[in-house]
Image (cartoon, rainbow, N blue to C red; front, top):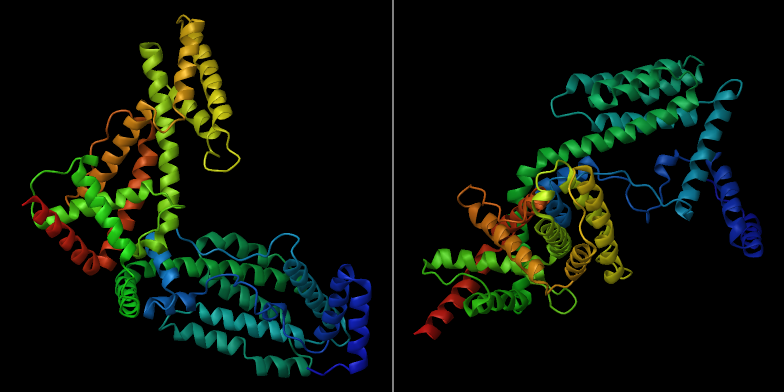
Length: 500
């Protein structure tokens, strides 16, 4: 790229300093236009190095599969069954987005100008064809040599360059081949996009649309790779994470202190009568039971006051998210239990009522974990809205309305549920813990636990959390079982010696 004169650079810098931030983008646009006119590559190669990647490439996913070099990515793929690669877009109104739009507009304007010359200039168009060729080749699977040969032959850049110099280039023919090849590689969900490409006749809009569809196809390919690689990543990730932690432990011998405290505190809680678990059992089953109780304690964790176990730091956010979801579900189930116990047979079995009441509660307490949440006002509103709904429902089905005293008593019970010490809330919370513990224990027997009473309204959400928890616990045990086994063994032996 030719260098600009020092005087030109000084004048540009002076203008930027003088006019301030507002004119910086304008000056940048002028500079970019000048440089694009000097054989700058397409905007797809102009992404600043400091900007986040637009997507996780198939190549990166393959590299992850080979050596799990990106442990966090592999961990996320293994544990999150809904994990999907998404395209990156800079924030609306951000400087990055402005610069990107300026760069792209300048490039496409320059391409249009070249194609409108007499004779047309194809230097920028050939650059784009080269990038498209590279992308198409990345879609090939091992062994697709025939397709590779077709792409190499039809998109031979040196031949295309010669045709352009001899004024024999049919750019529309090149574009048609590209679209046909995209149709070969794309997922069925992109068929409509390919059809729309075939309807575009102007070259510049066509190339812009081709790149847009190719970006979508890259995402499709990456997500297909994610689903295909997940089984392979599981074993690779288990071995890799265990090895990395072992290496860290050798350099930092106290790297299991918080893990040991977490397990020891759980043992003290269980043996101290905090939960059922005093039945006689084998050492292995005792370890398993204690360990499962320990995982449940993480769903009651004080994240501000207590240090999270080292072996679960990468999953602390997941546990915190599940903890908040469970607290919300416990409130929903508690309020519904209060309402149905109060109204009795009058509303029992009425179709749709349970879901309406549940939806109302969930909407009103959705912000319960934010600093701006006002419990008193919110639960007063919940009580009022539910009583209005009940009033209408009773009237509709020919039942007498609640007396004012009975309605006020119901409102008072609903508002009281905001307290963690509320008896009904404690019962519901205990049953949720019982269900989750049963779920963890039942995974070994492949039988789902029975749903305790009062949890039917939240059964679907509760099962989803239980599955998520089970997947997380299973993977964590696979990775750290050698470390857990020794700690748990020592804790149980210590307990036996104290009992003697």
